[in-house]
Structures are given as structure tokens and as C-alpha cells.
Length: 292
Image (cartoon, rainbow, N blue to C red):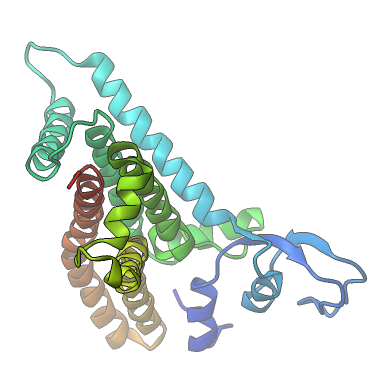
């Protein structure tokens, strides 16, 4: 909840700041007024220090939450698989089997090659991204407030609102696209696809190469930024609604009703965004397996 010691702008900026660890350059004036005499690896205190770290920085919260949620996914599905029974399955096993069958059915419909990696990858992406998106339904002040008791001043618990996470996953998919494009078509076939398509004439090689490279590079950026943009906008709305709690009883009650309504609607968004990320991954890998 927006505290009395923070203005609305400060409250929003605080919730949009990652817990960042990185290298501050010499000469940086820190939050407490001290000046660094040499380059120092430390935790950033505020957005200005995080920006001063530049590329030499890690979003500790995004990395920790995404890794933790990934481990929860692995533990949950592996434990259900080990206890799976052909007798009367439990509710959790039924639910997990529904998810697996749903993803497997979509992969069979969209992927036209032969690759044992695609279906497990699609399942991992769908559930992992869904778990990361699901963190958006936790009240925006709850976890950051609890972590203040152990000295953690900044915390973003929704990894998919961090472009470093979404673009990192997208670049992983892009690397697989390039790998299978070269493996299936050969290096020469992949180069021909870039230079002789859509106009199959040597005179149009520069035009073909420009269009194909733009389309190829646009895939990972659109994949990562689509997820980031939708989840960031949803998180921002939750934060703006939380600001209403400090504006009196009437606006607090109204804000509570808005938050419940937005959370119900947001369930559809977080599921849809995980599904879209999975579908596009499968489609891109299917295109990489097509040999013209």
C-alpha cells in the first residue's frame, strides 16, 4: 500500500525498480552522500544507481524468482509423473495430464517436422511462463513489505515484467531456430533461403537478404517484447489501483473492487500470454524445419 512517507511518483518508481547488483563506477555519488573512489560491485539503491551500473548489472529478483518458479515446475511435474497410476488418478494427476495433452495436441497441429525436443520445450515454456505471469496476482505490496524485514529494499516478483527475462527466453528460441535451420537445410540451403526468397533471381539478392533478415530478427524481439509489454501494463494497473488505498476510505473501497475485477480479468491475460509465447515458439521451430 502506498505509504505516508512516499509520494505517488516515488511509490510507483519504487515498485518498478529491480533489486539490482552490479558495478558502480568510480566517482559515483551514492544514496547516502558518499562518493566511490574506485569501481565497486554492490547492490543498487534506487533507479539512478541501477542506471549508473549500465550493462554490468544483474536483476537479482527477476533471476531468483524465475529460477525458483522453474524449479517448482520441475519438482511438481516430476513428482506427479513418479506417482502416476493407471488406476483411479488423483485430481492433481488429472490436471497435469490435461495440461500435457493440451500442449501435445497443439504441437501435433502446428509442428510438421520430427523433433522429440519440441513438445517438452513447448510444455516447459507454457507452464514456466504461466507461473511467472501468475505472480502478478499476488498483492503488489505484500512480498516487498515482507522482505523489508530482512533488509531487502526493492523487489519485483513478476519476472515476465522484466525485458531481460522475456528477451532472454526469446533469444534462446532464436538460437534453436538458427540451429535447426542450418541442421535441416544445411548452411548452403539456409543462405539460399535468405538470399533467393521470395524473388528467385541473383539480381534480387540484396532485396531478398534485407527483407529476410528483417523478418528473421523481428521474431525474437516481437516474441520477447509482446510478453513483456502485456505483463508490464498489467502490473502497472495493479500499482495504480494500489495508490488509491492511500486516498481515503471511499477510494480505498473502490480500489479494492477494481483490483478484484482486474485480477479476475488478468487470469485470462496471464494464461493467454503463456499460450501465445508457446504457440509462436512451436511455429518458429516448425518454419526452421521446413526444407523448400
